Image 1 (cartoon, one colour):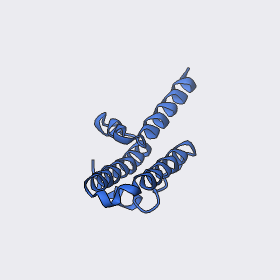
Image 2 (image 1 turned 90 degrees about the vertical axis):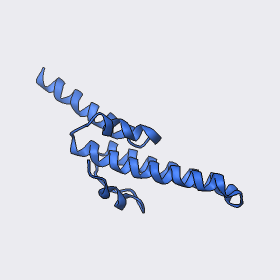
Image 3 (image 1 turned 30 degrees about the vertical axis):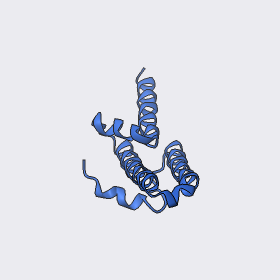
Length: 108
């Protein structure tokens, strides 16, 4: 019975870490005050990804000249999200390329 509880807890942790890379859902682990270090690491990575993504969408929406770049930027954010999800499934605490280094700035 104890082994089943441990497996269930591991799956819950993995799910919480995975949703950290799905847009605004990165706030779920943060707002639920998840205490697991693995989940918090990925929540911070997902939060920095979401902030960067939202910022670029705002800039591209305001400046019509860059409108043609929307598809390219969308692909970049998608690839970074997938990298984060793959890291979760492999139980790795690895920073995302380029933007991952800024996630350490968050303290919560």
